[in-house]
Image (cartoon, rainbow, N blue to C red; front, side, top):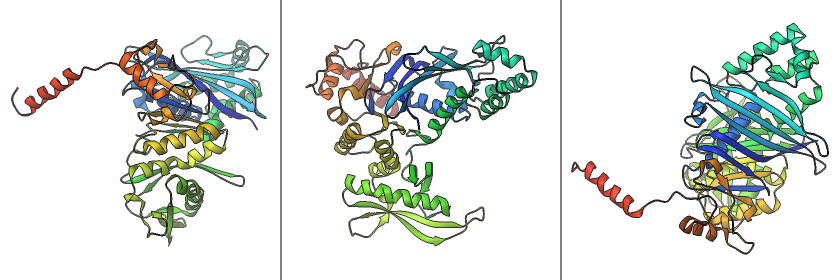
Length: 448
């Protein structure tokens, strides 16, 4: 079976990035930079990819991700496709989104290109919504389509629906269905599209601090998991209340219980003696009348009495929230995990240790953003990307970094003294900040 891995990401006019590109050289890639410098833009672009490739609608608020003053944004993803540990082809998927006259977001262009070693690059499918004369290429496909009135109408309707619903055209289920029924386009191309859909559904995980990430750990735990038993694969995110017992149907409870059994093996080594207890409080019907299980998550250290997981630290809950996915990254070459602000609440020494282990031994890929500088001392320079103050070249690797240099020291020195091609820190003025504090205090106290 083929394995797909993201190799590079390129952004144009996306959020505050005029142009920027990142590339994986190892299994881990950490993105560093000051606040508001474009780190989370990469996470957001991956969310777009995940959403579009799954056939879902983009969130309307994503209209604000188009760079101010620009009409459209473009994101490009390069994938390596492996068979028997060898790259058999690369896939290049580009999509463009823009605002229509009603200021509503829509996907206006998509292109999927394939490159097989020692062969010419091939455009598998190209879609241009605003091209009225020929909005689907290659040209041979377009001629075949317009020669069949029935299927031409079906695809035309699909184009309008995709625009209104902020969806991908080429990743929609109806596109694959129409093409297979009509045999208008080579089925092998549709199989490649299906491969990317499968990757986005089962192997791409994007965790943010707001939305689907661990954003409110005082009340609930967003439990992100990927768990396989025999031939059965389970994955996704389940919100588990930390303030009171919950009731889920029995199949979901079994997934939660079995995943925590696996997770505890690693957790007890990361936080010595700690394990999560899934306390089964007996059967209870779910609100829709199905057989369910009432349970609560408890925290137990060594042989001490268990306490509600609610009372553990934010850092421990953060680790628990994503640990199942980290286990999958370590073991499964197909898993791609992106985590925004991975360091939030996590002890820096432990964070560095986890990242070092994953970088050395992982089969999948981990992309993370962070403010904590400890990992700079633990992972290789090839595994690090830094934001710049230049929106036209938003991401860079540190120059002048030798094998025996400490990347943390070089990074801090570059912030203070410069020396990089593009500045990596927008300098602030100590005295102006202090004066601003004094001025604000006078206004607050009515001494304006």
